[in-house]
Each structure stands twice: as C-alpha cells, then as structure tokens.
Image 1 (tube, helix red, strand yellow):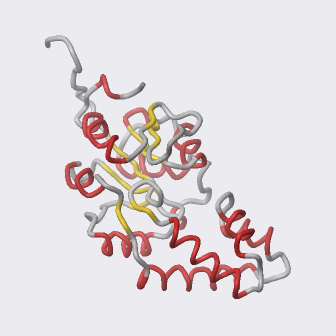
Image 2 (cartoon, rainbow, N blue to C red):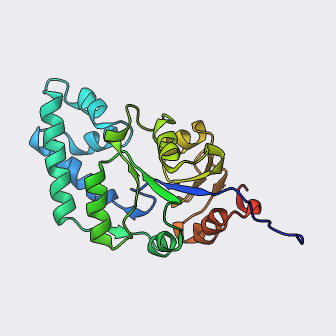
Length: 222
C-alpha cells in the first residue's frame, strides 16, 4: 500500500441525529411548543427555552407542575403529529446525497423523537427511508446518556469504535462521546465542546463522512 489514507478492513457505521442535523425543524418545534403553551395559558417563549434543554416530561415538571403530565404529553403528541401531517420541513443541503451514497445497513438514526414522526418527516422531505431508527420509545434513557447510541450500534452489529456520530447539539455530542464513538458536529458556527471534528454545515461534512464510511483511516479525527 502506498502512502496517504489507507482503508480499514473493519466495517464502518454512521449514526445520525435528525433534527438540526439532517433536517431543519427548529421553526416546527417552536410552533408546536407555542401551541402547547397557549393551550395551557403559559408563556410560550419561556416554555420553549425550557423545552430546548429538557425532555418533555421534565419540561412539564418545570413549567406546568400543576397539570397532569400524561395529559400534557398527550396534548404535545397530538400537536406534533399534526405538524408532521401539515408542517413544512426542509432537509439540509447534502442530506439526500449523503444518505443515498451510504450503503444500506451502514447507517441509522438516533433520535429523541418517535419513529413514526421521523418517517413521516422523511417522506415529506424525500430523504431515503432508514432501515433502523432508535427513538425515544426504544431506550429507557435518552441523550446525553450513551444508551441510545449504544443501542443503535448493537442493533447494527457494530463496535462503538467503528461508529461515527453526526450531531448538532451538546446533549447528543455527550451521548456519542460517552458511548465511546467518534463524534463530529455539524450546522453550527462554533464547535460543540468535545467533538472530534466540526463542520459549519452538513454539506461541508459530506465527503468526510463518506470517506469514514469507506474505511479511510485518515478521516477519523481533526
């Protein structure tokens, strides 16, 4: 083998977050939480601020402690399902090209959302449908716990050290790092603390992700 990047004989896998990584859903999330807050007579901006940092049940405990959390969650799910049916979603530049180029069985989605909504959004944006989605219902602990990413690796038959995590948010980055995986950040001006590499956009990361998936050892870290 001549000098330069050398291929690895071990299979490589890519694990993607969804919202903020493969598709832009910020405005949808804000609208859903605003509608939910209005239903309960709460300050929508404050509710959304808390929701960005916590899981829904934790959000309810902070902003609507006097309401039944099961009722709160049902209301939120209704609004989210309606948004999947009628909302406007946009895949980030490069997402379709990237997912079509990755071999089947070499990638999965790891999300704090629910699988039926993710698949609905993928249909709306025209992204290729994933074979594997590890969603909120699949694990007892969500991000930043390593459990979601470890679960995805196990289902793919992958070792953590052979997995690349693509994330945009601190909790997801911590999840991937705690799982012992390579973690790259995308779609932000500043790098999230801890990432092995940072790209300002998903488009910028596409050739490097494909190189990793092909087994190029020279494209694993900064």
